[in-house]
Image (cartoon, rainbow, N blue to C red; front, side, top):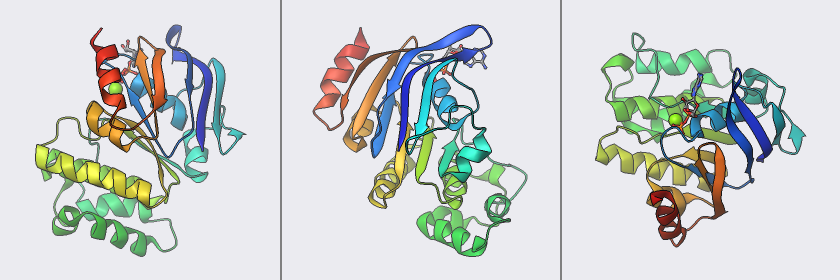
Length: 227
Ligand SMILES: Nc1ncnc2c1ncn2[C@@H]1O[C@H](COP(=O)(O)OP(=O)(O)O)[C@@H](O)[C@H]1O
Ligand SMILES: [Mg+2]
């Protein structure tokens, strides 16, 4: 699926990522402190920024120079950090925006409303009035309407009330069970490693650690990140 090899990238002349390699995997967790370059890595994966060096591969194809919409057409979807939605539109309208042009649009919306009961309940409510957790679910639902094979999630549980954190974590595990690959940036190291097949730790734009996921990896990662 998605693979990054020896990537250098940044903004203008500022280099943020240095020789970053991310292996393919069903769920791949990207860990690291604030400012480490995690969001930049995800922007690179979806094509919002282009690598100065190295390659982004999707299903073996070099997509490094493809714009985001072409990557979405190939089966990638991106949920940015910060529970973004159109606050003045209702939950349903937010979903319709994405589903509108698609055959089976209504069925795709219904599938997501069934997945997220809170969204079904508040379908007619303005997205700006939803809780942070519900807006996060809405953002994930919107991405899923494009029927991605790879879902890219940037801190989906950041700033969200604990009860919904558990629901969102469950959703991620569920999606993996449905065969959707996930590239996950997450501060909850315990959960991220439990869910992940592979992980990388970023520090100042360098990969300082990588390996297989599983709960046993958590102690090693925590120790390394404490330095
Ligand atoms: N649009 C931007 N322009 C210039 N520098 C940026 C921009 N976005 C992020 N950076 C810088 O890139 C580095 C990594 O940021 P980011 O990828 O957001 O880290 P993380 O998601 O791990 O917190 C930081 O030093 C940040 O200041
Ligand atoms: Mg970030």
